Structures are given as structure tokens and as C-alpha cells.
Length: 421
Ligand SMILES: *[C@@H]1O[C@H](CO)[C@@H](O)[C@H](O)[C@H]1NC(C)=O
Ligand SMILES: *[C@@H]1O[C@H](CO)[C@@H](O)[C@H](O)[C@H]1NC(C)=O
Ligand SMILES: *[C@@H]1O[C@H](CO)[C@@H](O)[C@H](O)[C@H]1NC(C)=O
Ligand SMILES: *[C@@H]1O[C@H](CO)[C@@H](O)[C@H](O)[C@H]1NC(C)=O
Picture 1 (cartoon, rainbow, N blue to C red):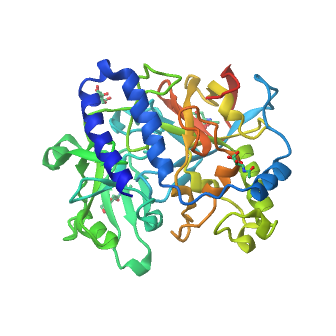
Picture 2 (cartoon, protein in one colour):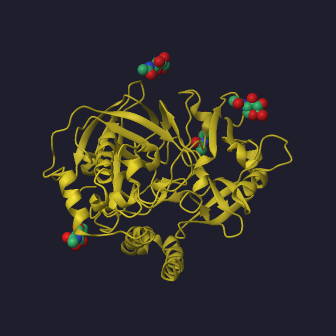
Picture 3 (tube, protein in one colour):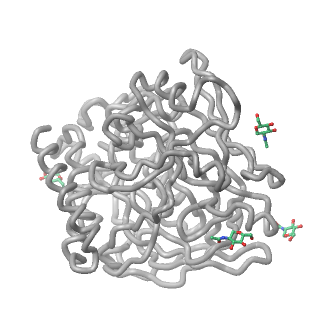
């Protein structure tokens, strides 16, 4: 790991400079934020066997390329599922509708102004857990049991702080539930400490408020969470400084902000991509030893379902009828089923995957092979910025504030070329 550490140190120093002199460094920024960041992520990938047996297996199971020309015919596409993950890497929730802003599914910066429109508030990745000694933001890559922490949004439009984020823990941890305000009042925020230099993936620097409980319990969120993590940590709520998203090769002048998502406001995936992925996992698992994926549990995965929750998308689409169709959509229109205006969802880049989806969302245990090693067999070489990474889903952003509902119609406004998003 020495080279990874050195590279990360070098990258974080360089990215500080880039942050200050952003306008002078666009081409370099693209390189850092995309190529090197993704390279760093894929360097964490455990041994990936390449051999002719498993190549043959992929060829047999896949039988053809999914897409050979664009545009291609798609069926009627609709939003099939919506997920919100209030705390980065902790359990997500499936919801039937969510308000959104260009920054997140309901960034909640000004909840009170939204109450007239709709009572639904979902706050995706507005909170995260940070190591109190290093200020490094912790993810389920390093601490898989994070996925067992359950955040729940109890919205209350009559409350001055918009309601409660209630955080609960598995019984055996001995940690008791606590509540923090969803949208703290200015008075509350004045008393909360801001950490300025929190690092995500050792490269991105961002701020956050150390969240305080709304109850008068003697245990602060910091104390309870530190017990769960076995070291000093804080619950952070995104701070006041907007976090700029790195440019992508398709959008070198990208103007976007995100909360504590990996890099972009939203992750989009499709049911067809998941079904195809599952078919390939089951294909490998039912082949026996010759499929040669180290650590693949053939018994479990020859029938086992792969849950969408592992990939932690926000908006899931269904109906195209072609796996990975979303790779070729530059802009789609979400047709609101209600009075709010239609919104455009732009897909910014493919999502390159790390080991996080290997964590079982119900047990917090990391699988040795699924999904990453299987994805590497047939979803590598799709992202022009990092040909060694495996892709699933696309990063995106919405162009305005609105409400998305399960069942909303989605039409394709603009296609990419054959290289995809
Ligand atoms: C299997 O496929 C990978 C990726 O396409 C390639 O790099 C490797 O050389 C192939 N192995 C064999 C033995 O054909
Ligand atoms: C927040 O909402 C209030 C009440 O609607 C409004 O007056 C104010 O301008 C909003 N602030 C921001 C920053 O949007
Ligand atoms: C939020 O927590 C407070 C304090 O425990 C409680 O009085 C209130 O009912 C909670 N609100 C919601 C919407 O659950
Ligand atoms: C549309 O909005 C109205 C109120 O503005 C609400 O009563 C109705 O249930 C909504 N319809 C759908 C399909 O969500």
C-alpha cells in the first residue's frame, strides 16, 4: 500500500493547489479528479484473475455486445425505485417520492421554504461520519458495519428544525438511538463547531458541522458513534461552503455542487443492468471451478439475488429493455406526474466501482467476489478516463428543484456516441 499512500499524499497536496487556482488548472483538474482518483480506487481492488477459462465463460454467458449503435430502440422508461442515504455509507431507504435540488435529493438547506410545495423531504448524503483524529471521512469500504447503522428522517413541517434524523444501531452494539435536527436553526448552527478540512478518499476536501443531539441525553452523537466505531468519530452535517464537483471529460466546465456523495449529486442505474449483472453472476457461479473467480461462493451465488441497494443508486429506471442503456444517455427528461415542471437529468460520467458494493447490506459482511470481481469480467474498459475500472450506473445531476416519484415517465432527450457517457 506504500505507493497508494504516497500517491494519495501527492494528490491531496496537488488538489489543494487545484482547489485554490481552479480556473488555471482545468485540464490538470480533469486528470486528477478523474484519472488518478479512479486509478486510486481501482488500485484498491483485490487480485483480479485474468485467464482464458473465465474469458470463455463471459463470452458464453454474454453471447453478444449489448449495444452496437446509438441511438437504439428503447421501450417506455419509468422511474422504478428511489433511494435516499441520509448518512454516507449507512443504510439507505427506498422511498416512493423525493424532492430534489441540483445538489442532491433534497439538500435540505432551507427546508422551511419548501414546506408549502410538498411535505416530502429526503436528504441524500447530507451527513457522514468523520474520524475525529484525522478528519478523514469514513466509508463502508473501511468499516463495513456502517451499513448496519439506520438513519430515519422524521419530517415535521411545524418544527423549527424541520424534524429529526433518528439514528439507531444493531442491538448487539449496545449503542442507543439518538436524534439530530434535520435542518438546524441558525441559532443551533452558531453553537456547532465546523470542521473545515475533512478529506474524502484522501483527495477531496470539504467542510461539515459536528452534529449535536436535540435531546438532553448525556451521550452526544460523538460519544455514541465513537463507541460503535471503537475510535473517536463525529457525525458531520454538510457545512456552509458549497462543495464543487470535479469536471468530467464530457463536461470540462462542469458547474455542480454535491454534499457527501463520492463526487456527483446523483447516481442513476437501471433494473435491466441489475438483472443482467445477476444473470452473469449466476452464470459464473453455476459453472463450477472452471469459472475461476477467486473467492466466488458458488453455492450462494448460483441462485442468490444481487440487491440494488449494494450499488447505492438514487434513481433507478426501468423499461429500456436493454442492459446498460443508461451508459448512452446524455440527457433524459423526468416527466413530473404532478404540477411541478419537468426536469432534465444529465448523466455526467460512468460510475466506476470500488469494493463498497461487496458489503452485504443486511449483515455488514464483505463478499470476496461479488459484485466487483464479476463486474471486472465484463464491465471493464467502459470508462475512457479509467479503462481498468469496472462500471455500473452513471453519475448525474438534475437541472432544477422538483419532486421525483416512482412511476414518473422518462424520455431520452440526448444520446451519447458509442463510447457512452
Ligand atoms: C482475458 O480477457 C482480458 C480482458 O479482456 C485480457 O486482458 C486477457 O488477456 C484475456 N486472457 C486470455 C488468456 O485470453
Ligand atoms: C429560505 O426560505 C425563506 C422562507 O421562504 C426565504 O425567505 C429565504 O430567502 C430562503 N433562503 C434561501 C437561502 O434560499
Ligand atoms: C423529534 O424529537 C423530539 C424530541 O425527542 C420529539 O419531541 C418529536 O416528536 C420528534 N419529532 C418527530 C417528527 O418525530
Ligand atoms: C398531485 O398534487 C396534488 C396536490 O397538489 C395531490 O393532491 C395529488 O395527490 C398529487 N397527485 C399525485 C399523482 O401525486
